[in-house]
Length: 205
Image 1 (cartoon, rainbow, N blue to C red):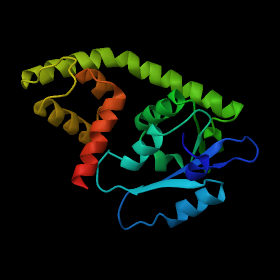
Image 2 (image 1 turned 135 degrees about the vertical axis):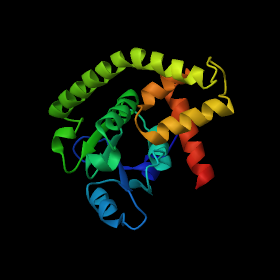
Image 3 (image 1 turned 90 degrees about the horizontal axis):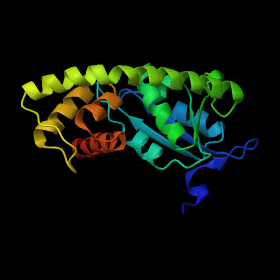
Image 4 (image 1 turned 45 degrees about the horizontal axis):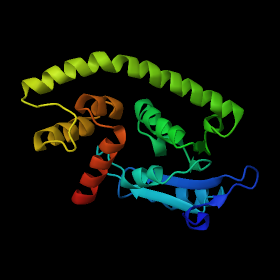
């Protein structure tokens, strides 16, 4: 079992463990300001990373999400530090919710899912995600047809073929297909997809 003191500090009012996440988009930007705000807000541990270009893989974000426990609260200075689009935000919020954790944005109090109002926002997010999922079947069907035309073979296998992996990386890098859609397209769980992207990021540095 993890030692909470090594991961985060408790919120004085709610008793929740606060975990900070900071991100800048280029190596020229400085993370110090975000980290200072998060620590001032009570975060004992801050996961921080610098991501360049259009790369979607965020190893520190995946590491943080993989270690979430029920009752944890992720704190960000602004939502755009956590996600690059509404679609991306929905994917991340769903992972946080599945872990039984919460989300708090210092600049957007309405996004605090540890409050009744924030939970209402999360419900709205969930409805939007459900709507998005309702479109996946149709989009996946056309995606499978296109992939088959390129010679990609589908099936639930322990590992993906090199050709399938290239298709996965290409779709993720293009940013036009959600993580849920990519996972459904190749018959893998979303956690597997995030792990594949994280492993690639570690290999490429």
